[in-house]
Length: 189
Image 1 (cartoon, one colour):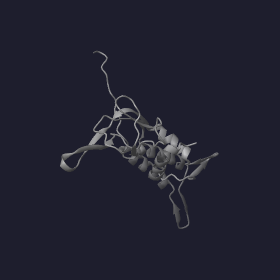
Image 2 (cartoon, rainbow, N blue to C red):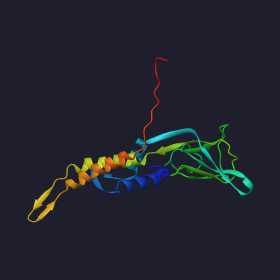
Image 3 (tube, rainbow, N blue to C red):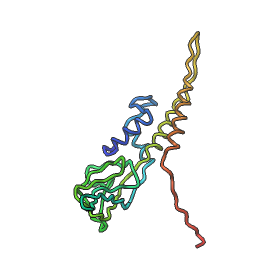
Image 4 (cartoon, one colour):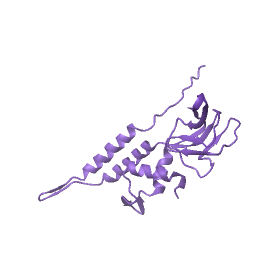
């Protein structure tokens, strides 16, 4: 059963990939239910571990500085219902923080109280929605490969256009997916 904490991300991918809840049936499986979209999302999940968030200074009257907003370098986080491994904020001592709201799509945390610029660390799960949408479009293309063109009298049905469209959409979303970064180490040093 799909995690409730992924509901908004599943709906976003559903929209990007035009994936209805009953696009087609293959055997006993009907595509695309929430469980299937969760599997696609989980293939494009990155676990973020103790990322130091950027403290955003706010300047008030008389030059007073306060720090309520903190930003992650990442976006599209799995939501949480309260301090689970899916999204946790900690201070430099490793103590779990509370008293904040989160814009999971943008990776922005807003505290209710001024944090004074103190270090805040995020552990959570982020997802690449564009790569997920590309995967869904490729599966749709694979399913549509069995379609054929049909002509009779003055009618011409070009079902192959749908297959071509799926491939183009997969390519489009693939170009927008998050960049992959790897660290190389020299073994001779």
